[in-house]
Image 1 (cartoon, rainbow, N blue to C red):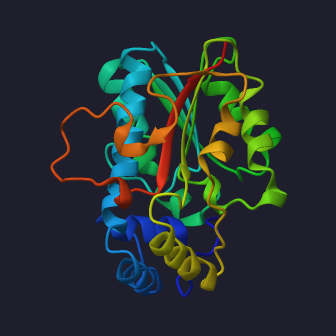
Image 2: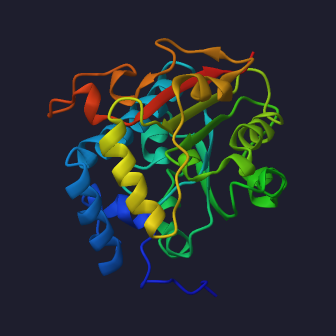
Amino acid sequence: MDEAIDTGSAHSARIYDYIIGGKDHYPADREAGDAMCREWPALPVHMRANRDFMNRAVRYLAAQAGIRQFLDVGTGIPTSPNIHEIAQSVSPDARVVYVDNDPLVLRLSQGLLDSAPEGRTAYIEADLRDPAGIMDDPRLRATLDLSRPVALTVIAIVHFMMDEDDAVGIVRRLLDPLPSGSHLAMSIGTAEFAPDEVGRVAHEYAARGMPMRLRTFAEAEEFFAGLDLVAPGVVQVHKWRPDGTGTEVVRDEDIAMYGVVARKP
């Protein structure tokens, strides 16, 4: 049975869904999103740029790096195109495991399971803070072959992890069981380009029980120690291999997220 959904409190995934134009949110999420956009009107631009980065990174991993297996941790509310749709548009036999601990995402997870017949998708209800539980889950082992390269995607989630959570260590424990040739793709929140505005948005999140840990360039680099960065390295999400398909002008000060893809030697 689905876990009860708290519709009276704002939730980060539903705020994100609201701001990027989704439909799976409640009044508390809309109130929070509106308050945040008043503090930083560029927030929708920033969030769309993060989504576009994820799409480009997955397409790169499937089309150029030859990855056929994906582990997406912190999936969020399904928004087309989802990772399996992008990967399977390149190679229909691609396999994807989605992981999230939000009961609303579980309820909507059918949108993540509509795989091409040649491939396969699975959904695991689990917490990023339990990497062993994720990696040992039989649904993951039944879907992914961990003797072959896997792309681990951790998109727009670690800024909700405090220092005591050891985000770098958790990501490393997810990556450690994956073989050589696997990749890590992440977007990592930062306040380095619009500190006042982003600080006010972070205050709005914290006031609703969602404290944020925004990271510097050097702190973002720590997630990729020992990995081979894919060019252009650690950059703002809109600068990671732009493909010219965006229709809006994006300024550096409109973006509060680093985007990175790296290969495990």
